[in-house]
Amino acid sequence: MKLQDCCVLIPSLSPDERLPAYVKELLAADFRLILVVDDGSKEEYQPIFNEIAGWDRCHVLHHEVNRGKGAALRTGYTYLKEETDITGVITADSDGQHIVPDTVMLANELGQEKELLLGSRDFSKGSIQVPPKSRVGNRITSVVFRLFYGHYLPDTQTGLRAFNRDLLDFMLAISGDRFEYEMNVLIQCANQKVKMRALPINTIYHDDNAGTHFHPIRDSWRIYKLLLGSFIRYGAASIVSFLLDVGIVALLMYWLFRDQADIQFLGIAFAAKALYAAPIARLISAPVNFLLNKSFVFQTKESKGALARYFVLAFCSLVVTTLLYGYLDHFVTAAWLHIPLYILIQVAMYIVNYRIQKAWVFPAEKLI
Image (cartoon, rainbow, N blue to C red):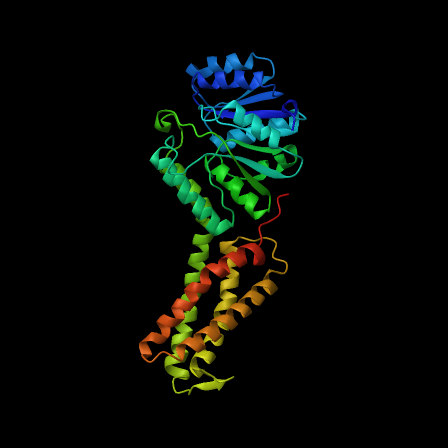
């Protein structure tokens, strides 16, 4: 995309001389508009914003109080949507971590399709620029994101991003006022199947990242609450259903069906009491788990077809669990091992069922 069709949006809090220097270089590169959002900076920083506001092709918006990076970005998006016909949007930070050649590269890579471009820094061990806490934090977040959302993003915390105008409404609909907003954008892109493409950029940290406004405890909590929120709720709902399921299996295995003999099927021996107990327990616990997942875990408002999909998954899971339990229990000689074996199989199915339910049974509400 041509730079003359693009805006660089920069949320800023308490900037130093690096912000006007960056803006001057962006203007020299011939971007159409530089939009700066002052997120409640104190009076002593206003001369910097006033200087930038006086330059051609620059505009400054102000928050009276600090509202957070996410709120500042949405303020900028609203202005671009309502006041301009800008085609391409590039977001960047004001702390000197992003350089103009990388910003230009993202703009040049930007096309007409609905995708999010991510300027990805190098967090490998060979990168001496990265502070250890930033390296570890990004590595962990990337692994967690891959595990629960199916996308590997080498830099989940980058502020250098680009997308075209068609995604403005989508970006405005995403919640989060502070640093968690950018993580929520990645989550929603994964949920809505918006393509995300990582592009390598220079890795720059000044003074061990001392100028960051990121609070390591408070903001990390917000980010991981988003990343793991549905999985934690899924865990709580699963524990309730699991205890109900195991309780019923124990009752049936040690009381109602305790004297059942093994049976043969296709030349394979199965423990009959296990084959009877597992389906009965699942038929009771499955409806309870569906209601918990729908209302509490995935918080689905529109559930058309969800019940049918859930029971298809529950049936398949039941068949796999029952046959696996019946087959393996045949080799169990100690009575006390029946329930631990069942627990082990249930745990193995846990992650698989979560991913399937999230993607297929209770898909996210369409935002675009």
